Length: 524
Image (cartoon, rainbow, N blue to C red; front, side, top):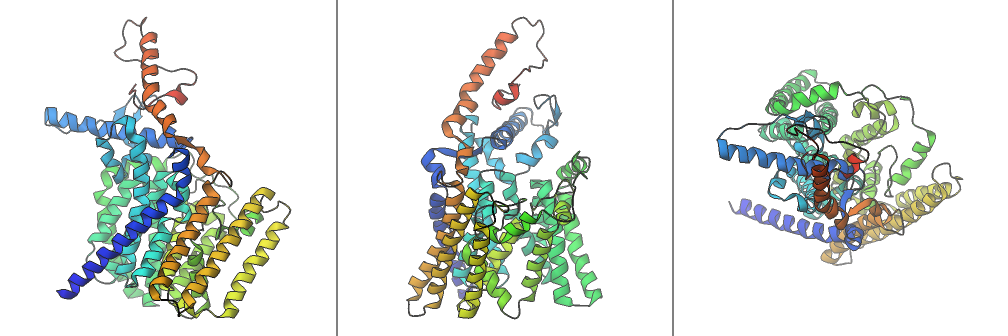
């Protein structure tokens, strides 16, 4: 009993430490948004789809509750003529917000303040992702809380997360659910109860069909590697365990079927399906960019590999040591998928070639950082010399590539980013190797350097002096005008146009530029 109480106390201390570090890093990482008064609503898809969908879903749910309170009946509207020229509500809204569980509290938020809740919601995704990653580490026996904290922060603020916090909030969904799916798989493999797996499958299927499809493929790959590594050539045991996993998976999908099946039908009949081309190899420039993607906040064909510099060192440490073959096989699997467009298209439903599965590479690197936390101290000078020499030679090639790999202005930014990250990595190596330093100071330095690595990833992405990506997002004043003031203008214009109509019980209002100025608050 005392041991259980002590464990709970330690876990509570851990989650407090994680929350404090997350809050501090959030301020530094997204400082450029705070300083410029910008939200996480992208001027393109962010307003047109995500925030509009969030406002719509909130109104839709309020309408359901109001109808239930007044009539004591549950009546779910399935068709809405206010969406385009009329369409199915689930089909139109599921991909963006309708299935997202964190969108549900928006029902209590007035439309004019929805962009504030949107900002909170996207940050909540990456915060919860770190919690889920922590639970994965603890369940699989990783008891070093400092290492788990380092891995969780690395995962929460990976480049995939930084990029999509302010681009596509639905792309953050797998960061939350996939670690829980892996926990569920591990519980079944270890003869524990299957409830975690069933609930995770159901919630993932409800949240977003596209990423449920990606997570399903990745789960199958994980299970295949895990079982072959565990049981070797014992086909009977492998089949037995697959059946044990299959039944809870089917049950989980069955729970989500009322939402999952209609969306599956639309996905199968999507017009973009089957139009991927040139699936043999990517252009040569893509392969030459790959080493730079490990240390810079950039991507190619959606391959977002950067997380924190120490995580890459952890991967290198793993490759230098004997053992841990399971993780090496998983790294090889990621490298193979990233190398061939056919596999990228497979994970994208054969719509086109892309690497929208690459968030799992960040998960793997963060987990390897936890596994190799103590072992990184044992890296020899020769091994470290080889590591740093490779990247400095690569930077020299970049600088003299004559715009073949990157444009000249981009090469300078990426080279500078790599130099800073390698310098941070050098300081990190000193911090973990110098045993003369007091443990508390050494731990603080290591975590500080991981935070610095993440900060510079954000700096080179968001700063007006670098890529200036933050300038592509709307200010709170712009959103306030679109969500509030323009609503009044649209209603006045509509009232003026309807003056000559004899019957306006059912009508359509359209015209040039209407899509750009339509407000989700108008409900017409």
